[in-house]
Length: 121
Length: 369
Figure 1 (cartoon, chains in turn green, yellow):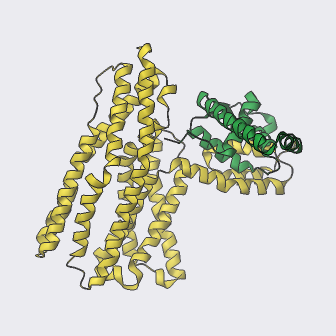
Figure 2 (cartoon, each protein chain N blue to C red; figure 1 turned 90 degrees about the horizontal axis):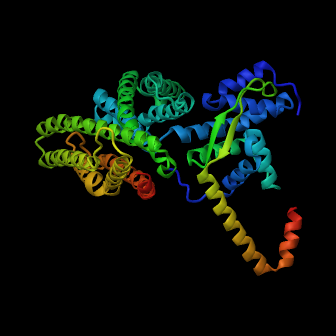
């Protein structure tokens, strides 16, 4: 069985991208969103495909092929959707991130938190 | 983004390189991102290794691969031994030379599985996985060895060794796949499914599948009990060396004991006709517990006794005259058993997680019953 107790940072990014994109989540849009979330680090399209495969194996997301469209040269999209397990895992990850943020802001001061938040946009 | 797509030739070329399982959507994505030919080609070539690696991860099972590696290598070693005697193995790096076609064939096998395996369950897919892929991979391995032998004479192997080793390893790999893919791969597919998220029909189907697989493996185990008897009993009679005979006897006893323990581990739980949901969940849980115990006590029940027998046989082999020549064989056997033990132990937590999930599903399903 694939390990689903914890997911890596990049997996969290891809899960977040799928959550944000809703029905329009497929390779190209997920890659753009993940790149936006991972800024300033670049994200390769291949890494997104590999991560999507892994998330699907872990049953965190499910996929299906859409109808072919002319703007894609008559080829289908593989659309992705968050599964219940994926939502749960993402929620746990978000809570952990929130706790880390709270503790670091407390330790380094609220000013740091505001400045850092502004720098990252 | 430009509206025009890549040239047809370029697209066909890239499509030919892509694994068929992901060809459709990846080509569509690349088409959508197309800006110019150079960008398209670079992007496709950068993605390709990752896609292939991901396909290999999805289609390859480490345990099956390890068994195939051992079977392939052993076939070539046995062929070399059969045609040219034991000196062939120890002189002029025989063990190393024989590993080359085995490694090349395994690499090809991984790649072919990644390209051919689409997760279909039909007859054509079974024939591809069991017969076509091993034959093509072994053919490619032999071709590679022939080319390497021409380029570097040190790695040259006689053609009869290559042919006999290749043919027997193709047969062995097909046989292993037919047994192990049911035993390991099918349960792996079941395991990746969380029973807490499955519908009652899916749980019933999973239980029935698990039941059929267990029954098939038990039948195969019953049949396999005769295989070592055919090898070790004549070997015992061939040599007057008491130590060697003792090793053969221990190996035979260890094999029978291992098969009996495997049968015992797999006989947990029973599924009647038209089972209820509770019975299915109970069967899956107990069956997985049996499998977990097989893996957990692998050293004590299977690998330990088998290793002891194998080491005694290798240490007392009458065909090897020089004592230090026994060392590589002993090392290879020890390494192989340790590697199997390590892989086996790694699977225990996964089985435990699955058992826990089934336990939770049982608690959860009680109000539904």
